[in-house]
Image (cartoon, rainbow, N blue to C red):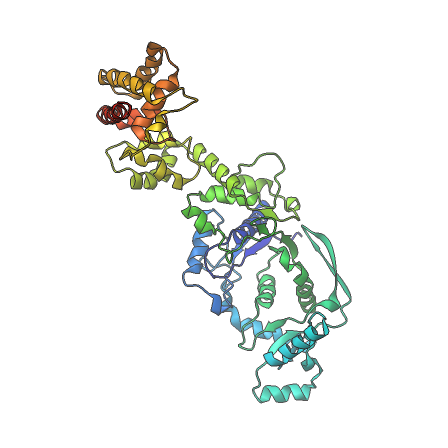
Amino acid sequence: MTKKVRTRFAPSPTGYMHIGNLRTALFEYLIAKHENGDFLLRIEDTDQGRKVEGAVDIIYKTLKDVGLNWDEGPDIGGDYGPYVQSERLGMYKGYAEELVKTGHAHYCFCSEEDIEAQRKEAESLGISFKFQDPCKHLSQEEIQAKLDAGEPYVIRQTIANVGETSFDDEVYGHIEFDGDLLDEQILLKSDGFPTYNFANIIDDHTMNISHVVRGNEYLSSTPKYNLIYDAYGWDRPTYVHVPPVMKDEHQKLSKRNGDASFQDLVAKGYLPAAIINYIALLGWAPPTEQEIYSLPELIEVFDVKRISKSPAIFDIDKLTWMNGIYLRNMDEDTYFETVRPYLERAVKGPYDLRKIAKIIQPRIDVLTQIEESVDFFDKTGDYDLEMYRHKKMKSTPESALTALKAVRTALENLDNWTEESVHETLLALPKELGVKNGVVLWPVRTALSGKQFTPGGAIEIAWILGKDESLRRIDTAIARLEEALA
């Protein structure tokens, strides 16, 4: 009988969601759901000193925003709870002491000074440091005397005569390691709290986790974890070690470097669906040239064998392009509700925001571009009259003045102000004047917006502004041009 696939995302509540962490969560989710398995959320808060107030809520919100809904977790329970490590503290000491009894761990009474002295000696000899614990050689009587005297201790893994050891990884294949090079890690700290690595092993086993997904920096530690699985007689999980997400060829993407978290990207105007689509492609190759995937599509095609061994570089330009695709693919109502808060901040005048939303949809890649691109609806700022000079459009300040006067007359006589009537009127003028379309339309767009780049052309802007406001702005532009050219 095949074991049910169960994966877990086990973040520490230390702040915003780092992109690398979110990608790990996504891969864990896709591995589980591709096989109709379970995806668990577990909060690893044993390092109380790094815990940040409100961080657990950020974890919940982030996963929900991108659609990574968990089957078991702290808020919804399940058969393997509790799902918060600090609520599981009672069990770890017993497991650690069981390893002491079987000879796979030992009590260590050494102080930090003892360890530091060994480290300095290794440095002076020019050799790599590996702690040689003298407590391994204490007799049972000596150990018991120290325990009875209340001396502080840690429980440390015992590693001896391991020799060559190996394991298989879904990404990196068969890996062999000299077990005698492994350092004897602390399993239980002097305060009674388990270390992150030890608690992980116990929790993963007791929660029936089948696949462990984590960064490839843990590859070298995996042999130590395997020794603990073997000591208990437990099955090892399937390992999936993933390459890092890089800022560039040399630097990892990280919170410490001030790189963008998921929350930062959302604040900068990126859509959660676009972010999750993009990070799926960081270190994973789809089976076809397709790049735009919904979450259900990713679940269907995801294959762990297509995860790369090489680091993936985070490309904000590629994410921006993808975000633009998502915005343009939205239906009209969804798009309007998405952009409405940005439009309401930028446009206070009596304009139809739905019309503005319609003209910006083909042209906006990131939501935060909206306010600057549409602020001219309320007020055209001072602009350089040289903007009327456009080589490609064959426009000059002189030709612009002529065109605007003709436009002024034509629009004033227009009774039925619709997008179609404005379109017909403005496009008829170039033929009447014997000039290219740009000679007329460029000056109109400049006069109406005062901007070199706008979401929408002269026709769309005039239609939204309405007849009175369009004529007022054209009159202002004519007066300024006449004064400048006098």
